[in-house]
Amino acid sequence: MARGGRVLGCLAILLVLVGAGAAGYGLRHWWLPLLGYALDVSPRVRSADVIVILGGGDGDREEYGSRLYRLGLAPHVIATGAPPGSQATALDLERRGVPRSVILLANGTRNTHEDALAARTLVLAHGWRSVLLVTDPYHMRRSLWTFETAFAGTGVQIWPAPVAGGWFDASRWWQDEDGFVAVNGEYLKLVYYLARGYIAPSVIMGR
Picture 1 (cartoon, helix red, strand yellow):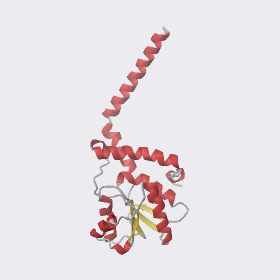
Picture 2 (cartoon, one colour):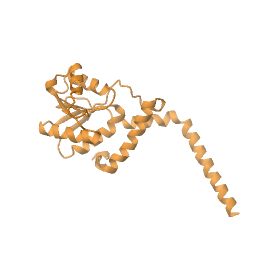
Picture 3 (spheres, helix red, strand yellow):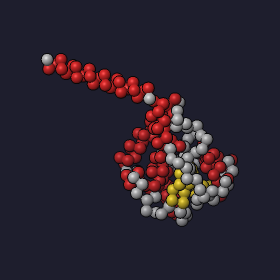
Picture 4 (cartoon, rainbow, N blue to C red):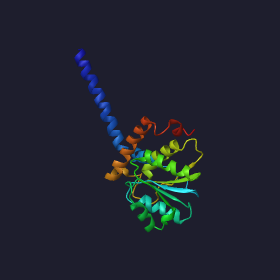
């Protein structure tokens, strides 16, 4: 009888899990977009001392950051993530209308945490007080929290400027391989960044 009870219990749990899975799948067009939207941040595009363009992506970040510069929103640009000694990003930005004289390269950074630390060094060295942070929408939540953690106590304002008109679509990210990889990767990296202290809990709480 005891064994039969355990079997029935396992079957009941299995049925609940299958039912929950089926319900989740049926409602996927409602809750999956929420996961995509949660990674994005409402833009706060305004005049700043410097535009920071994070490395990676497919060129959308450089194009959007250059557009913000051409609109006169900041007189300086920092670009991160290129290999040490590389001038490729500077040349790319020049082709997009950003003069070489206003570009600072933070080469050799390997992740968003290192991007934030390198940008912090350059921003503080130049006495700048405000930053327009440019990256893809799916990457913005983690980037903003990471930068706010790195710049904590400096008085420097970090304003998010997620790429507008890029490839990422939060409303259907799971229907595209690149979107699926990006969103799932971001949630894993958020957990990792919290565990490593790259993102401070106080930043998440907005304190």
